[in-house]
Length: 254
Image 1 (cartoon, rainbow, N blue to C red):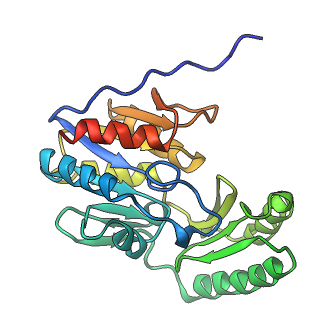
Image 2: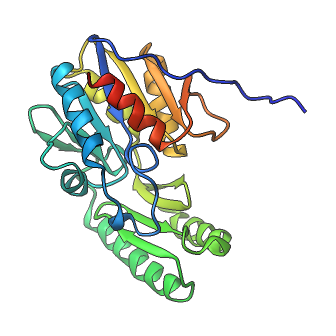
């Protein structure tokens, strides 16, 4: 049977008119059962720093992780970044803006209650990991693939009737995230600011959460780069795996 999906070419090398946006998990680092256990290779950090210097600071991280986790992973680099799928956005100047920061106390109480129920749920499903991100909550089942349907059913049951949050599916994870936030909006917001303004956006990502970013890059006449072979996707270019991303970054660093 013929392959119905496009064969995407690898992305070209960056030129000095580009702005680079990078997803983290599944793009720069391999997934792990425990998201806290990952490390960033020093040579990858160095390549990103060199590219940032070359592009006059127009390099940003676009991640589901909170900003404080990104800063620990990438230290001593302190890059512009969007955390929690765009709920947190930090500019080149270091100013941090939180989308929907005025959520009422009832929302915080609701998410806390869901967290408590999720912990009880995970206790009955060994291998399921509950990750509290403050303004969002993630349920991972990489360590318990047999529990996928139960995790998804739990999430769908608890999001029902709550207008302030939506479910964001991902690779062996589902997250409760604030409405009005996604990676595409974060990219568009950063593209309105210096040093990104007027440049060609280039976004690398691997997961369903990154489709928002691909759409934003495509709409802004930039490059969208899928890491891996997940389909369907709106990405125009592709790199086969995380190691291929590392090699591409090293090429662009010199």
